[in-house]
Image: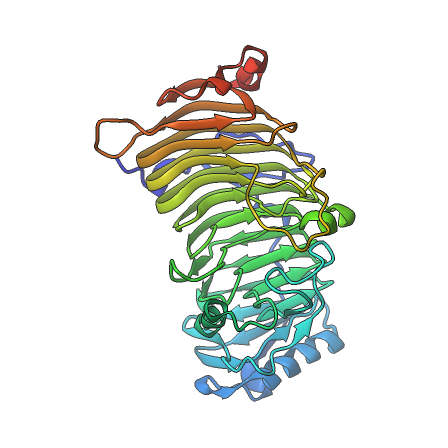
Length: 448
């Protein structure tokens, strides 16, 4: 029987107060208090700078002028840039510190489809090159680097990347550089994104990288299921990230925690840590909750709970590869419901490509302490696929109270395991022998 979002609002995981700050409003637990919303005393409108919301006028100069004014006048408490109802066509632009970009109801900030003059920026140092193509990469549609105290919010206005032209170039293999994300925040802290609709990103939708103290809440992210690499939210080498109360339906992973790519990520050495994903609903041909596959800086202390997935490829996907290095540890997924999913749980040590031929095949990732509990699935074709890496067995895996029902037929969904060790309590269908290891029984000690 389908479990509605309302039925899974009650959370049961207590966070370490010194790192994962959480607050409770009635029965609703939230981590959003790590970044308080800021009331701006100074308010301006994009129309004050020549903005025209007719869907045809190019407003790039208007946005850049408005943000230049915010940056250089430095009003105490920052400035709110108001975007009234209308369709504002624009090229990419940079945000600045101490500002709120506020989209009124009916406001649409729409990316131009003229890609010929799209700005290029340097590759991220933890990736060494563009994710898709060597060299630089196209700047995100809305971009920020080295910022603090930035808010993107409103009355459910829309940021539309008009990504179909970029998807066509990807399919036709005519891309010169890596496609732009819809929103990318780099080396920034104290960021809030809420109450906005993100539509048709050219590439990844929301990408906080090298950031700390980030709240993403009450957002809707949509793209066609066949749109390539349109990940919903990708925290990347970032810490203290709170993702809550959102709907995501895209062509790739809904939430994917990353931390750099092979030798470049190892050298940069910045992990993703203390990531909370809570009360997210959605569908995707790929994974609902993912770690990787770019995990070379390490990923630790991730909590995903109260997740509802339907018509999806994989429920939970922990993915890495040889050459990645890094440590993936202390990952907890709890209170997850899935319906019409190909594979319920996937843990794979052979996933993802390499930036070049200079990766070290002896740089093996280490995966340990994965807890997957209170998970229920119906119409699941395959219960689980868990394949670690020879000489780097994935350990400390705990499955507790997991029920994955198959489609109608003579055989239940099956498990396939190799190079893993762990334990299982109340798991149906019966898990593989590697999850019944005596020496690993402590993996589930706190859940028995």
